[in-house]
Length: 400
Image 1 (cartoon, rainbow, N blue to C red):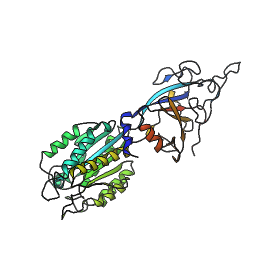
Image 2: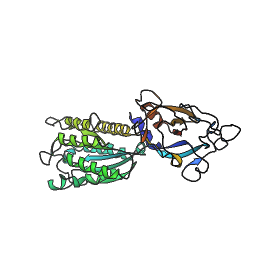
Image 3: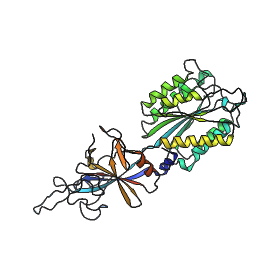
Image 4: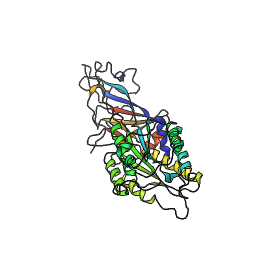
């Protein structure tokens, strides 16, 4: 999924129109807006009268006729109840990016030729601040935790030092991140790279925060070196990889951005092994950023965070509660993508092997609708996109 998907940020809220079988008395009050079974006020034609198709076939999907009177005329309901149009609002699940950002001396202290602030710190900070402040980041949430913590080993090599972010989780764009980074620049450079502890602390923060804030969460680790400065058993790529592997099992992926040393004689390779952390974090490989040319470094870093932003965007949609307390039936919905007055019926495909399709997150017990890749890209790049979910009275498709 490319960075083009970032257009989702400005369009996270999409309209869902729910069709359900309801009696007129049940439709009074509540968060839904109702139309009549077959008269005016219904935004769709043919809803509420006669028989509808059981497949995904447009606005009149899935309604069967029923007769209440001696004339035998269909009322469009089941058991004497009329099918009415109900409208509710829902949102695509928001994305939260929890950044752990390396501010150790190797980023620019100057104690080694390759610890050059103009070649490493300055271009990386410029690109990072631009990401947090860009309009294209609108709709995302982000937090920022610096490491190492300011202090000696007893202060920096403990999880509690990173239990709360230095910049709280907040909506983007925001200038708070750039201001916090500028304050770090005014301090003395910090020592050590306690990667394991900042990862543990940030994951702990995510676990607590998401209890009350629904959405997708990812950890973004930005560092220019391997773990060091704590106990030997903690200063290892393997220890960090094990931690992020456990997080993936809990639905939290980890992206890694490694800032390489400039091509100067004697400069060690301190980033190649970071691929192991990314692989364990379910993101395949780290983004490794070359340094030496500040403009190229800033551009490469910007491309990396844009790619992360795009890949992190979710096309999961929480399934709204069925109107009037009715039970959700996973085989009795139709999903339609609307754009500029044109409707495209989406087909259920558990394997996402076709275009214009959706699936469930868990076919056995679904909690969200997931747009397949081509549909996700189309919807998130379309400023006029709407999604309609029709709760039908008959089976629309089968879930194996």
